[in-house]
Length: 138
Image (cartoon, rainbow, N blue to C red):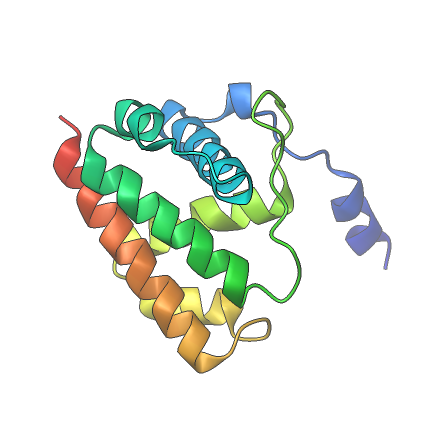
């Protein structure tokens, strides 16, 4: 029991200590969510951050998909906040799994929270984003 409590006391990472690509993805995702919630067109800003319009469109689609499928509101930090949320950590892990084509690990990570259809949609949207992002970066 003490080991479990110790894990809960570990602070969440600071975005400034994360690899640059992960920090860039989290900040872009935050921007996408804020823009969707406020009906703001952020395509240009996302294109600049992600290296192209297709990647910007794909992250907006991913943000909407997660918003509808997630059992509770997907928790993101404010764009200026350095603290990373557990949901943002999940997002980075899910992007890694999608990039590696590791569907079993993704299913294992999400099967208790999200139904089969929603998981399928999220994984496909993750893969589409990864393909657009990877193809747009040098």
